[in-house]
Each structure stands twice: as structure tokens, then as C-alpha cells.
Length: 242
Image 1 (tube, rainbow, N blue to C red):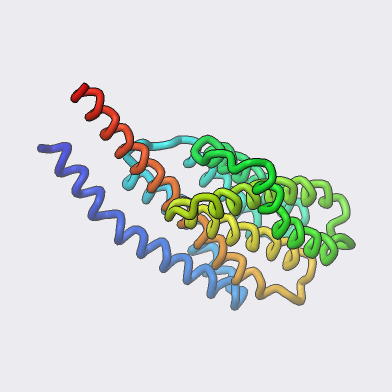
Image 2 (image 1 turned 30 degrees about the horizontal axis):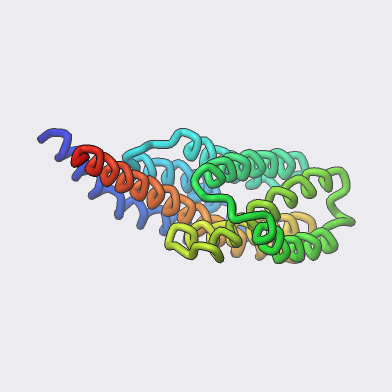
């Protein structure tokens, strides 16, 4: 009885915390738009810890790797608050860690769509990458290698998610694809903004995409956990009947 009441209490907390997450996200987006450092510091550092708490309360199969991915995204956010080249490099390194962990989780959960669909799915992301590389090349200097590495994984993961969605357009795959597109746009907007100060307000759009991407990948992970739980219940029922 006590365990059931604890579960109900956790469920009641989830919706208010999600509302707080989006409220802080709105504060952060507006703060970035108006370049208000006080409200940036008052909102941005708390977004990922809040999403980790939401995931902890929502999940029945708590995945520490997903938490590690969110911690990497949190660290990237903290370093990217400062606009120096060094902090930009560290921030993008944490973004790379985040992407690698998410790729590992998704590749374990989603069936490989095949080499031809994967290749075709990569093409839109390749075109976007080449456009941004052309815009930012002269400004990236010693960071161009990191940009290429980030771009490679972005193209591969984006192509995988797009081809998986085309082959099987489930709700989970929809969340995954939209999250990937938002995060790809975020990454490139940060690069363009970081080296073209006249486009500073792009940071607000990048943050809007970022918080939406993180929430959608959380929804994807939760839906996948529920799907696997239902599958296990159905299979255990079949074994008992046999």
C-alpha cells in the first residue's frame, strides 16, 4: 500500500515539474533574446537537472546512460554561457559526449533500416552541414576539426532517425526524428551565432529548439520503456498459459 501511494505521489509531481520546465525554458529563451545575463543564469543551469528529476519520477526502468547524456547536455549549457573560444570548445565536446550516448541508446532500441535508406536519409543532413560549413569555415580555425567530427555524427544519426521513421512511422520514431531535427538546428545555430556576433539573437531560437529537443528525447525514452514493459507482460502471460 505504501509503495502504491509513493507511485501516485510521484505521478502527481510530474505534470507540475514539466510546467516548471517549460516556464524556465520560456524565461531562458526570452533572456537569450534580450541578452539578459541575470535571467540566463537564473534559468539555464536548472533546465537539465529538472528534466533529470522528471525522468526519475516518470521512469520505471531508470537508465543511467540517459541520465549521463542529460548531464553532458547540462555541462555543455554551462560552458556555452561563456562566449570565449575555450568555453565554446569544451561545450561542444560535452555536446559530442551527449550525442554519442544518445546514439548508442537509440541504435540499441531501433532496428537498422538498411544501408540504402540510411544513405538517402543522410542526404538532407549532409546538405545542411555543407551549408553551415561554408558559412562558418573562415571563422572556425582550430575548431574546424571538432566541427567536422560533430557534423559526421549528426549526419549519421539524423540519417538513421529519418530512415527509421520512413520505414516505420510510429509515435516513438516521430518524437525521435523531431528531437534530432531540433537538436541539429540547435547545433548549427550555435556555430553560426558563435562566430557571427551580428546574429546574436539566433541564440534564443537555438535555446528554444534545444529545450524542445531534450523534452522530446525524454518522451521517446519513456515511451520505449513502456513499450518494452508491455511486451514483457504479454510474453510472460503467454509463457504462463503454455
